[in-house]
Length: 438
Image 1 (cartoon, rainbow, N blue to C red):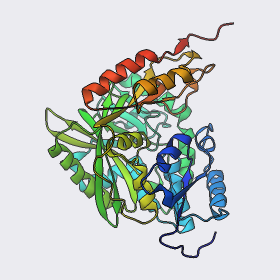
Image 2: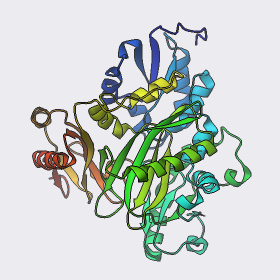
Image 3: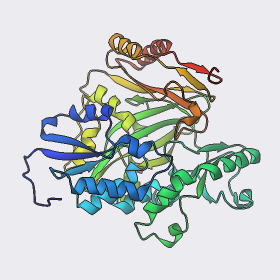
Image 4: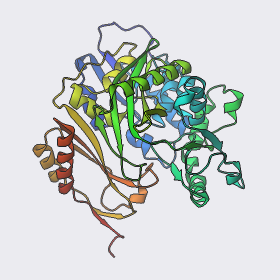
């Protein structure tokens, strides 16, 4: 790779891990996009469609592509969860590009390590928690928390292998499921942990451990922002509305309808935690709960990237997607995300779900999706299933449902958003059956 300095006003070569068509369009629509050339590194299929995540192979292939790239990279960005969020700091470090420190990333994404860091600075804003080894002969013997609680791996993707545990029977069912499937992410995550010298109390806690946490309740939201030269900036608060089961996401909705005084407190908690961790030069999104009846704020989780499911929401409301933040930070600049000036006053990303395994006989046609986009301008439907598959073949689903489609909608009010969504869903017909016909 050519390491000679590039002209400040030259077109910047931005390489994107796992770039797909939807996000390529968002990137190329950024203000001043003529000053950037975007290039994909590893395909989405190479990253997400494997039954496992061959970390060493991914790293070597990505590094080779970047070192042999012509023109050479000025920046490397990603917008996906595991494994992209975890290999990105390794690659930027090897290539001498701006980016998040690997240790800081791990202090966020290793859920147990993250809770210990949070406990040191914001102990009143986190749930009770404890480690659980799911492979102990009598795993229930280690439990210190009372039922109910939440059980999840110390590293996961989305809500994969996350379970609400209401009693001992539920605990043993969850443990059986975790034992069978946890290796898919635990083993590659352990490879990432080998790249750093871990503190002794973390070195023994690999990806095959789980975290049990007391339940959090209330309204959920996500603060999205970035840290540049030690300064924490929040550019948006997105509400995360859940289904009746309290665990499954129904939609992301922007802007938040929570009181500003509440989100200000969340921002203070986020700032203290990120500064404690040494987080810098990266976007973040941090999930919180607010319990209205007790006015209690609780920190759920820190993610070390923009949220790709927020990109279209920011684009609709601000007139620019949050990819601007990732790109500018990766070039070493302060993004200075703009105020709202988009085509819509609010926007949402709705998950269309099914709650039992089924065989997919048919999905909405391309003509149907095009007609929906014409009738509700700005609407985009991303299908997650295709005819001839079982829903159980989908990767990284939560423990209670299967995603059929993701529906992005813009409107002039939150009430109008819901009205549009209800009408759109009536047009999206999925033919789901007990099995294929003989």
